[in-house]
Length: 145
Image (cartoon, rainbow, N blue to C red; front, top):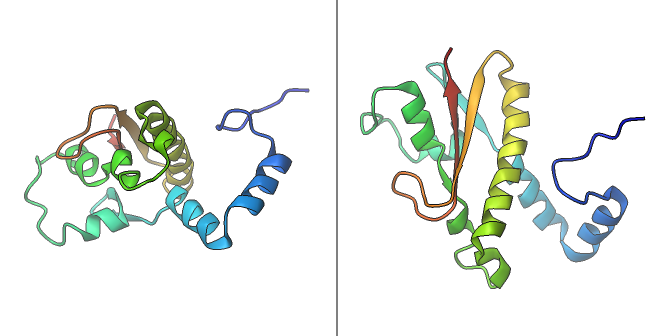
């Protein structure tokens, strides 16, 4: 017998689900699940987080001319900003934010592979910001061989 562990450490499905059901409301659970499986859009063979792309409208001339550069910039999320107003002191710790960012990227990786099996992606997590975002940031972009 070979055990294939989940991507989250110390996974115990029965206990974890019981804890979630006791602590979180259905609405909170759904919001978390939505963040792990966001809407993606394919535009001119480029893949973006739909919510981020909508923020840029039609002005796509602010980026370098590479497909990867546009995707990397537009798909950038600051994990530190997510927890900016959190009252939980632990959520402000960089190590915790890095761990959460890496888990989010794992879920996005699975979803992107499912949606676009013919494409290859790079996933990046930065401790010190990316582009005009500060703190822990995550992004993804296509790889071309």
